[in-house]
Structure formats: structure tokens, C-alpha cells
Image (cartoon, rainbow, N blue to C red; front, side, top):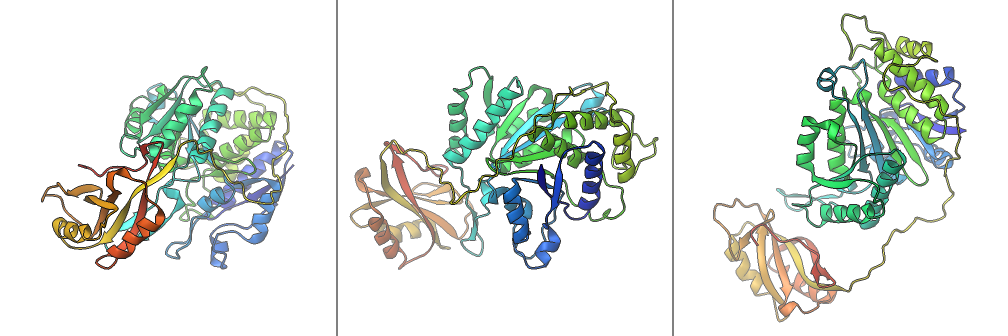
Length: 483
């Protein structure tokens, strides 16, 4: 079975060599095709951080095992890590956080075991990186949450929870504020939950989740979140079990999967053979199970757990009265523990059942569209204008352009209504949202909206615009604060 391997930047080659040494000693039946990705590839002029040959190889093999990678700063290029996940639609980021005996934390010292799986949507949200400067003072980031994308990751989370015998699955969200975007994600979660009545499912506002994870982490099992919130919460969970050096990561798609260490490249210690390879090894063990190599995974993981229980450690953790091992010696200690059984969390030796990677040859991009069951209607438009004028001055000018089809409904600044009611204590920036709705809720077409746009552009620079839609008689747009 062949897989693609990218060693990464900084400490990446050292920890990857250590992990592959452990795999080879454990007679893992894999062949490795090394591919070129990372900072040095950016430096050679490849703006996506990978060579065309690397992209082709990964798409042929269907699986990438990668070390940490650096994105050059100040060159306007996107993160190679995010690019890889999005290019190959690895829509579910799965990260398992478990207490490891030998890795002391506040919770381990208190005798509180942690076993939390975070499933993070991996493609959408603000990670689309779609940003614009609307004025010299105002930046806009577009946040896309889609029904098909949400259903993909949530169904994966439920299936994984069911397979693993989870006791609880929780949706973390901010639907109390972001009622349409997070509201859609939560709606999809509740819809999928109905298909799994045997699982206890619930939801929690993400800031409350962050507090409860710190106070009572043992209450949680599987948590599914949107991309940005999932990124933050997963790093919080890493802190509960000792840091990113003990946090494996899997990026799962229908055709391609990526297993990686998500910690940094640590250039300050690169080349010194002192880095901790545990996170990459745990990611590799998850990869072996993904490939059906259950026995190999259990032997290696039991050896790692046994080694940690014995107090063996690298310099970044462990009992300081015990001399730290370098990267190579730490790997050798794990190899020397093959066949040993840890006292805690011993993994059963299940037989290997190798699976074939689903690297299907696709001829076109898959289009994900749900059936539209409700009538769509345009009922207005939000026009985002640049102005340093006061709200009343702007309103008078806008009303002259409303014509016979529109009413000026509200003016807001940074999401807070400043007209027709507002407060002089609301600080303003030079970008307003002026909201026009159709008279008596009559349906509009795009030509009506474009006519208003052209007319208003005679008085204001229009930075952006959004149609106000309704589906099935329900408003599909948010209100301003105070509206």
C-alpha cells in the first residue's frame, strides 16, 4: 500500500524520520512516496506551496502523511496547510485529545481523565479567506456556511460517534448572535440528530463551551463545530492534555485524507534532534487505523503509552529529574517497548483488515446543491456606502433615490442602527449599510436593484451590496442591532 509523505519544514524532517523509523521497525506494510511541499517550494515560485508532481501523486494515492509546514510571511501567499485541506475537500478535521500517563497536566494531577474528540468543519467559514478593504478604515471578511458542507461534516461526526460508541455528541455554535450562518449549522445538526436516536445529542454556545471545557472537560465526548470556532476550541483542548505536542490531527474527505502534526515548525530547534515526535506519531497511528492496519497501530500505540508511563520523555515535557532523550533516542525507546502493555489505556490487538484508498478518478468537480423546496423572492437590497456624513444627512440623500419601488428602511454602522433611531453615543466609521426594501413587500427583480444602485452611485461610492431574499415567506437576512 502506497502513501504520499511530505516531511515538512523546520523540525518536520527530524520527527518524520523518527516516526517512519518506528513504522519500519514495526513492519508496517506501507510504501512511501516522498513529495515536495512547504516553505522551500514557495520560495521556488510555487504559490500554493506544492509542486505539480506532488499534487498529482497525492491525488493518485489518496493519502498524505505530512509534517508541520511553514507559510512564508509577507509574500501574500495562502497557508499550504489550509490549501491542501480545501483543495482536496477534506471536510472533516478530527482531533482526539486524551490524557497520557507520563504527561502531567492540571487535570491528570487531579485524577480527571480527558477523552474528547473535536470534529471541525474544514473547508468553509472565514477560512475561505475572502476579504476586501471597503474603505481605508474598513475591512470585510465573508463567512460562508453552506447546508451541503455542514451536512457533510455533521454526518461524518455522527457516524464516527456511533462507530466508536460515544456517549454524547455536542454541537458548539454561536447561533444566538450569528442567527443565519451558525443558525444554519445548528439546524443541520438537529436535522441529522434525528437519524441517530440512539446517540445523546445537544448543543451549546461556543463561549460557554470554552468555559465548561476548562472547568469540567470530562463531561464532553464528541464536539462538532464550524471551522474558526473549531480551530480555537481544538487548540484549547490540546492545552488540557499537555499541548500541541500531544495532539494528533486527521483531515478526512471522501476521496483524499491528510494526517498531520498541527504544531509549529519550531525553527529555533530545527536540526538539533531534540524535537518531540509524539503528535506526528499519534497522527500516524490514526492513519494506520484509517487504512485498516489495526494490529500495527495497537502495537505501536501500546509501545508509546508504555514508554510514556516509564517516564521517558523529550526535553519539552516530563519529570525534569529524569534526563531527557533526543528525538532519535525517544523513537528507539518506543521501538524497544514493542510487545509491552501499558498499565493505562492499553489498546486491543485487533487483526489487520487493510482497506483500499478511495482515490477515485474524477472527471469534473462535484456540485453539492440541496433541493429548493420554498419560493425565493427578492424584497430589497443592502448597499454598503462610503461616507463620513452624519446619518440624517445620508438618509435625506438616499430617500431621493428610492423611487416608486423602494423604501429606505434603516441605516446602520458596524451593524448598529443609527437611523431612523439611534444614539449620538454610537461611534461611527466611514462605511454605512443603507437598507432599502420594496414597498408593501412586493417582489423585486435584479434590474430594479441595479437601477437603484446606479442612481445612488451618483451621490455615494458603493463598496458592496447584498440582495435581501425571502424563502417561503421567511426573511433570509439579519436585522441591525437596535432595528
